[in-house]
Image 1 (cartoon, helix red, strand yellow):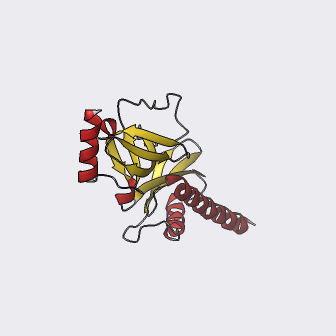
Image 2 (cartoon, one colour):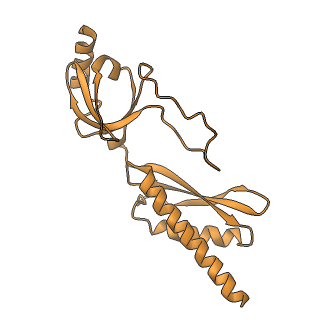
Image 3 (cartoon, one colour):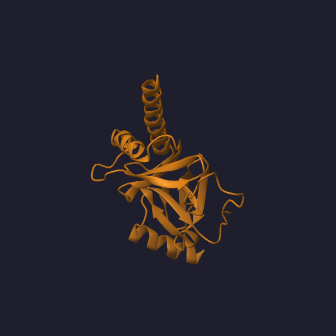
Length: 183
């Protein structure tokens, strides 16, 4: 109890997190097992082995967090102060990568240029950055184009969804223009 009290005192005074902050915390006391099944196709997803939610209350004994899935967690202050804490609310943005497989019949330079144009239209795009689009991987009949953006968001999934839709749109337009020229 005393360790929690003194840890809570430090948390309240140092204020590494405040109510309303969206945080990810990783600690050895609460094991969060990384996926052990083979990763997704062409995936190098980054995994912070921890828990993510919004801080509801910081007290002398506990930190209350509403997890992203809606559950309520009460973490003892002594454990929370030892954790690695990523304060997503204090970040200016996050880097998001989306990958899309393209037929080799489409010119990579043209595809990259067209996808970059689509990425520039994204509402999530941080104003001071330019999207980075490049060939990430190649197979016998296809290549994978990756796009990296700095996004003004705390969540990767909606950003990646919009990026993939833009990539699909760009490739579909190029395929359509290629087939109309062939006719």
